[in-house]
Length: 328
Image 1 (cartoon, rainbow, N blue to C red):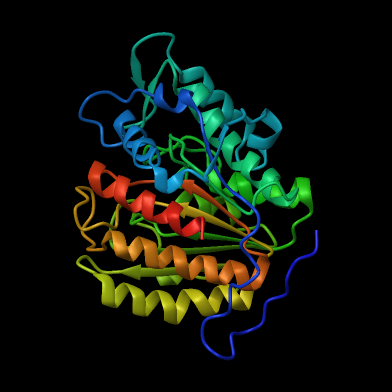
Image 2 (image 1 turned 90 degrees about the vertical axis):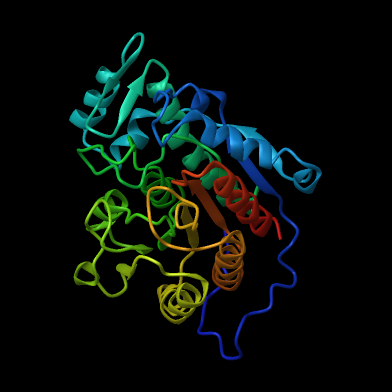
């Protein structure tokens, strides 16, 4: 598929005219509502219910809705060791719940949910690369950006965004994929999976220090990994200044053929698990910036995958603003 080439913006924001014709998809699956972490757990069923309710309005009537496929073993093994995949699936209980680790809970429906979450990400890439969709939002759980090659943590089982990026390379021959992670927590798992892979660029904005403790600038590798850590209390003005100054130029320099977004909405001021101070308008702005880069560099092609966000109202508003931006 021909890919628009990307050069530095000489006159500010690029024009997006002529890039509005191909549809935006929503991919989800009812299995993702069967990953039951129990009452009181932050990563709970109600998160996805809130997002789906927010997207079930006339404003999203043009959003094409699709059912997530299940990820194959071969797809998972691009990002995870066979032993780790076996460990996760064997730990899924027949009934009730169990702890995979201190913060990652499994229920009887967790295995199927995890396979559908990873499968949605690869399905999104397939739809984009075959011209069926231009941008896709995967409303799935469990999230993925803390899952490392051989270890789960932070509510995550399989590294969905990294799996999507690797699928684009292996199945479609995409040479350069950018993963942009605006979750408030650093995506240690995504970074670990892509660290030694050619043609992948991981960019993360996150509160630092904060769980999982990674994501300092010392980990940066020019053209491959860019962490932009921000202190507790960072709000709109400071976030936007740093994002526009560092993230945009780095993405243009990398020149992606496809953009993957790890879309976490826990940098919201209301979120109980962090201390940043972004608003719904900020998530809309971030999306607009990334859409502009994608329009300029890679035909507008974006696969966005849900990560965190634990205040239900802020999550629903942020996700709706994000999807509205993807539909522009």
